[in-house]
Image 1 (cartoon, rainbow, N blue to C red):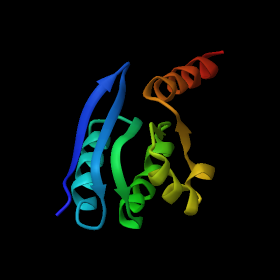
Image 2 (tube, rainbow, N blue to C red; image 1 turned 135 degrees about the vertical axis):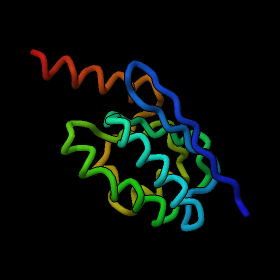
Image 3 (cartoon, rainbow, N blue to C red; image 1 turned 90 degrees about the horizontal axis):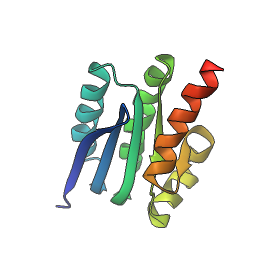
Image 4 (cartoon, helix red, strand yellow; image 1 turned 120 degrees about the vertical axis):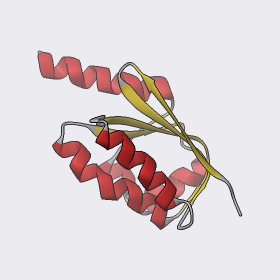
Length: 122
C-alpha cells in the first residue's frame, strides 16, 4: 500500500499543505479530513505543495473540487505549486489549469496571495 502524508504548516498567514506519496481513492478521505480541519479554522488561503506527490487519482482531484466552491465563497483559494510533470499531466487532462492556478514554486504561490491582497486594497 502506497503511503500518503500531508504536512500542514503556515507561512505568511497562508496554510501550506505539503502532499507526499499517492493521493487516490484509499487516501482521499484522509486528505479530505485535513482540508476540512483547515476550513473549520477559518483558513481559506491554501497552497498545495505537490513536490513530493507521486500520483493523484480522480478521487484525489475530487477532494479539491469538493472544497473549492466553499473556499472561494469565503474569499480564499487553493493554489498549487511544485507539481511534478507526471502529476501535472493528470491535472491537465481534467482541465484543472483552467480552474486553478499553478506555480513553479512555493514562493510564487505564496506571493500570488500577497499580490491579491494588495490589489484588493488599491
